Length: 354
Image (tube, rainbow, N blue to C red; front, side, top):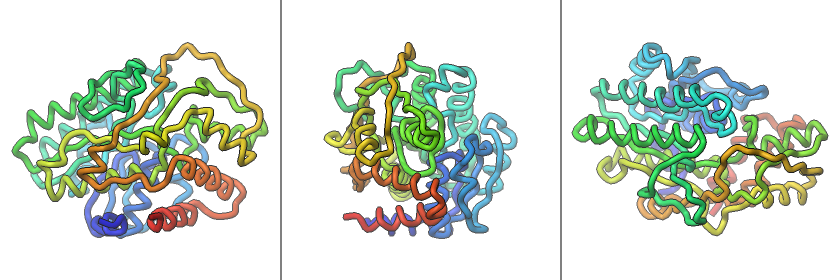
């Protein structure tokens, strides 16, 4: 199925999207709005300035509710008013470094927030497909340099990874305990190191590169040899949309966990991205910062399941995704093109990429 058909499937569908003010959430909100989906977004206010969500204009089909997923009553009331056919749960505390600073808050948001949504779904009587977006960091990483598959053991050395792995176990428990013979179909989507224009989060490599460039300051990095499955934001988003479609048409075949990432041969190190930035004259001086925080050094995903069963295919290689992302920030920061037109341009090029 062509990706344009995947998008058009969501025309006039009622969708509940948590985390819609975040980086990935804003991109997904734009995609759904572009085809006339009826979306209720539920999220905290944007945490960065600038923020992609605040830079975009949306149609009257979009209802933006500022709320906390830890506030069960408001969360449930908003959900019930939406009467969704599809749910995409993106709201999270998504940063490893932040999880070391505020571990309890990270678990409260990522685990208890997910528990609240599962409880809400447990009381829901209408047919609904729910995709819970977790992370590629849910696996127990023994640094063996082997791509993870969906059946590998879960774990997490840092609080962020642990909170997401715990959420995966929670979702699986509810799926087996309460939703086996119900109208609710659940799946989890594991992706990470997602890049693209409009991410201004702290302690993420490309936003850090852009900030250093704008401030004319050295770039500080922690682990130049760390390997990650970098991917442009449109790749996993279309994976999520295909997965939700699969739950709608064949729930018995699509429940459970799914990996979304680049091809194994396309993973890159932090140093590789810096070298691309240097080639484009975006990265100047680089300073290596010592860190005693535990972070995975090698993280790769096996995406065979999504490729075979969802016909998922990463459309942009990591180098193209990186270069395109740098170009996005250049055009935005120099006032050449606004955020709506930048996303629209990326989407058009992406959809027409063979």
